[in-house]
Structures are given as structure tokens and as C-alpha cells.
Image 1 (cartoon, rainbow, N blue to C red):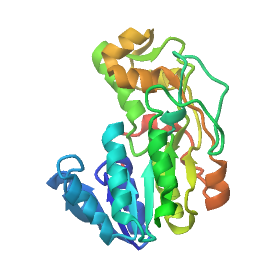
Image 2 (cartoon, rainbow, N blue to C red; image 1 turned 180 degrees about the vertical axis):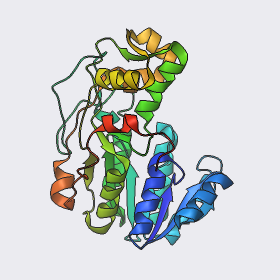
Image 3 (cartoon, helix red, strand yellow; image 1 turned 120 degrees about the vertical axis):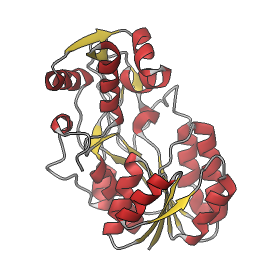
Image 4 (cartoon, rainbow, N blue to C red; image 1 turned 90 degrees about the horizontal axis):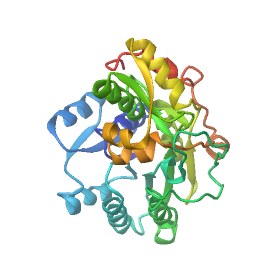
Length: 299
């Protein structure tokens, strides 16, 4: 298959490039600079230089040449929706595949550091997140694209980690840099279910091969609360941990990360991904705490 990946230079995007190349597919990836382009060439993929915001019409047009289009870029909600609408217009009537990357943030619950017993599968109803739940509308556009002759698929990764990288772990390191301690909100019992980036990439590869039109899959393999992660990081770096309120969290991480990540609980399961796709996370990649001992440069 000819695969085009939007956001190919990112953390998830680069893992998708590796997996599709390993699967024997012809892979092209949209990147914004020559350094990212060089990394794609080294991975065996063809780079396409462009910017989804500055060069929207030209970059979206590249989708016409692909059998599978994977959207793994990171845009704000409204530009993201507009980009997906444009991709659907370009692919309409082609019978080609469009895989959209959402995230379990759409169902996250603000708990201010408390644990929630609520956990959601792909088929469960939920109250949309006040902050990012509008992305569900974009999910619906993709899942309903079958009416326009497109095999639309949505994947919701949980908190992604691996190879010494993770947005969540990066946030904890930011708190060390700014305060000298690993910080968490109030009791720190909240969490995002999590998954290794290579296991996420496997779901995309399986979905491209055999997912039905309109499918939705979660990508999740475990969960560990934020305070436990903070304590493990503190031991590694020889610093203390500290409970903080939301106001200080905003000062450390910014409003978006403080509200969407560190003050919320997002617990998910992935029975449909396991049942429909036969997906199983690798048994050596189930514990995010193992990542804390991995240097950031490890691959």
C-alpha cells in the first residue's frame, strides 16, 4: 500500500513511519523542516515538506496519491476539523482509507487529583470533556465518511510513552526544572491510562489492513497514577515530590496541560481493538515505570 502520514515528524508519527515501512509499504510523510525530512529518509520513507496551516490546500492534495492516509498531526481543534473536512473532500468517492488520530482526552474527567472509578471502552457512552470534547465531532466526520466512499477509521490513543519520551513525563520534568521537585495536583491519584508508542503504531497497521469502515479503537495497555510516577521520577533524579494546587499547576505547565492532563482522570480499555484486530500489546512494554530508567536518547 501507499501510505501518507500527516505529522510524520512527531513522536507518534515517527513510530507510524517505522511500523508501516517495516510492513513493506511505500511511505510518505508530511514534515515541516529539512531535519525532520532527513530523519524520514533514514527511516526508509519519502518526506513531503509542507505545513498544514500555511499550505493547507497543497498539503491536503497529496492525499490523492495514497491508498491509506493517516492523520497524526497536532493542530488546535478548529483547524484540525477544517483539515479533516478538506481531506474527506479530496478522498471522496475513492474507496481509500483515512485514519484519524483522536485521543482519550475527549472522555477525560476533571478530578483535581482524585481517582475516578469510571473506565470506558470504545462502545461506552461518556460526557464529553469540557475542554477537548469537541474533537468527537471530528471523529464523527471520519466515521461517517463511508457515506462519501471513504473507509474512515478513528483511533484514540491513551497517554503515549516509549523510547525515553512521553508528553506526560516531559511535564513532570518541567516541574523539576521550574521548582526543583516533581509536582502533582493535590493527592495525585488521578491518571491517564497509557500505552507504548510502538504498540499504538501496531494498532494503526492492523487497522489499515482490516478495520471496517466507521471503526473506533482505543489504544491502551496499562495505568499508573500520577503520584506514583512522580515518586519514581523523584527517586531517579534525587529530588523530592510536592503536591500543588491547580493555580500553581497552571504556572508550571500552562493552562492547557494543567487542566487537560495533570488535573484529570482518563481511564480506558480497548476490547474492540483486541477483538476486531487481534491486537495485543507487547508483554515487555506494559509498565510505564520502566521508562523512567531509560535515557531520553534511547531508541
